[in-house]
Length: 141
Image (cartoon, rainbow, N blue to C red; front, side, top):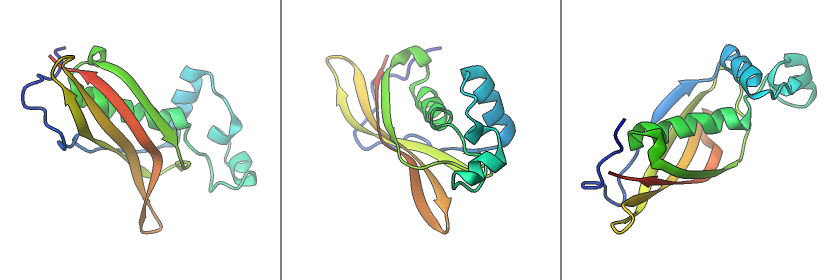
């Protein structure tokens, strides 16, 4: 794959929004692949007893969706030099998470772009941010 060309990347440019409906099969597959078998991500009764509406997605599952959006924008996973974020809210089954971001700076010397990132969802008619204050640095071609 080839990284996104540096020319044409401007401060303020938005990453295309990437939506995904969170389903239990995907969360179960993530749990098995990661080895994080916490029952909050596997068992409705345990999750409800902890005060959640049912099984919740791993924070890193949501972060993985955000990383997918960054890689799609960058054009090559190797172009992404770092991603950080804060987990702010749980994500329940059936919710649609939307990853997004915008270019906040470009450095012509290093040919990098710095992105602000987030993941939103709609809950009770209002936007909520399960991932916020994300940041990525992408090296461009």
